[in-house]
Length: 67
Ligand SMILES: [Zn+2]
Image 1 (cartoon, rainbow, N blue to C red):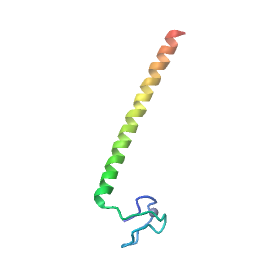
Image 2: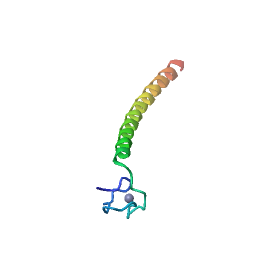
Image 3: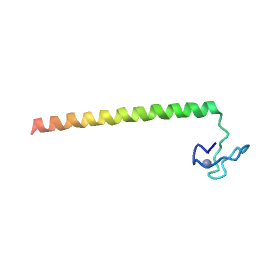
């Protein structure tokens, strides 16, 4: 097992990471939820990126129409 924050190896039984001093006594269920949220966040980021690209395309189109 490794630290979820700095990826350093965790010493069994420790509640705090020896490398970054963060609290690592996190229940596995919460870690799973966090991973799930990260996946959703990445998905939303991708969607946002796509939407921005489309918006930029529309803006460019409108600009050239006005000129
Ligand atoms: Zn750490």
